[in-house]
Image (cartoon, rainbow, N blue to C red):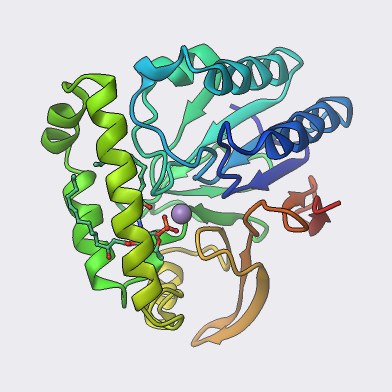
Length: 263
Ligand code: LP5
Ligand code: MN
């Protein structure tokens, strides 16, 4: 797999049938990505607001997004996906249908490199331009309630049980869970729901990469930090909403720029 050209990164679109404006923006973004001949698109989780199983493909929104992704893939852009906390149940069937390649939770991407699973930590030396990519939820280690919840729902046995239930039942459970999450996040402090600085440092310590791109926190930004062995940078993607939304673009030389998609 060659990603020697330009790569784009997006996350937290939270596509839902209730927000056709966001799907329209996604369609425009993908059409531009194809016409700009971008070689790889990395979707870093929460593409969908909720995903309850690949057998829910008959939903018009799901079929539409699947078709949009497939078209981009057929026009020559490789599409990669890292799961978010809303769409971790996206499986092989949706990946195959959309032409998207699923990646593991943390990967490294370097101009001309193949994404490589960082768990266990790779011994291979990295190019300076390489970036670590992830959804970002695993960095929020102060949010211990969320981390226990994550451990439960990322368990393959739990997922098999959940997926064995009828779609209507799963849909109802997802609605109930969203409600619980809304209450829980209202009660948590903003600090608890942000990344933990030590956890970010540990991610860098486990790699020779010194650049990180993630989403999840819905706090778009850029942070430069000093580690014991030099500088590191953290790029945070925005979620997509009215007047919000972005993509990061990395050219073949490794330069990263932010593209404003909010208008
Ligand atoms: O999503 P967001 O931004 O609101 O909040 C997240 C964390 N919440 C979640 C839960 C998702 O919102 C729910 C996604 C539903 C779609 C997927 C459906 C497929 C599975 C269905 C399972 C029934 O990820 C939130 C974080 C926040 O980000 C910031 O990082 O704080 O974490 C929580 O709210 C978790 C709570 O703190 C603890 C969990 C309470 C529910 C416990 C029920 C456990 C049993 C689940 C099975 C029924
Ligand atoms: Mn998320």
